[in-house]
Length: 306
Image (cartoon, rainbow, N blue to C red; front, top):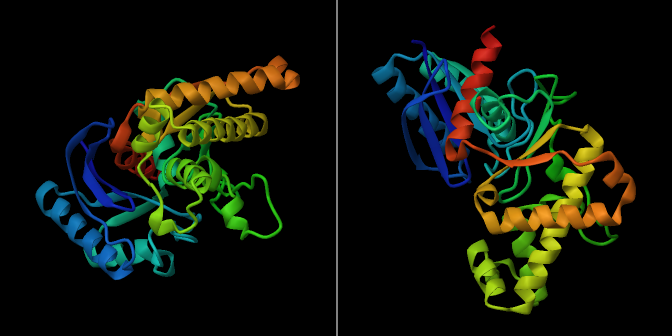
């Protein structure tokens, strides 16, 4: 049985483990991420790889990481990992650990895992949309991951919605309308008149509980958030025409939010007759949860060897 190291770098934690050639996890653990200090992130990754190498004898590692990864295995952007894209991460880690290192965009890793052993296992044409702090995205066509010219294919969080004349363009991106934290929390706090980010309510569960208790601002925020997300999903649908849209992130595990999004889609279809005639792809939640990044990074590592 061949074993690989899988690592998933998030804004709060680095999750890591040993994944088999059939997608099973034999061991997993995590450690905090110091996302503002690239040197410390690289040190942590080197230590993890050395540890897994000494215990399990692995010589290949797949790393799920935020940002755009180009065909040369280099980072063009690094998302929440501030400044990490300024380093040649794969080359540095390979030299330090004498291990083959494959970087995989985090959304592509989730989609690859769901295609391998998850919700999209029997589907060749699908889109994966992680809705977390912001919005990610990944596209599979005819069973193959679509990377595009620069590796940025599927970066739906960068699409623009309701572009105004004054705000910085980034603040009009889909992430700031549809991302669970950047989107829903932004809408809610703006309705309360809170312009200072330090004063924001950033716990989605609190907003859901307030809506359930009858707070008008929370209820209106959820309605707006659901419609924004439905619009994003509709735009993805008409652009890609997939059989399936797989929703990831913590949102996918919250039945209240998933129900709200689906109801907003149905309302949109009633109002948009052309789209109603075409039909809408199936919406499903990711099956693999917090393990998807590790599994998907290894999936792409194995695929690269064939």
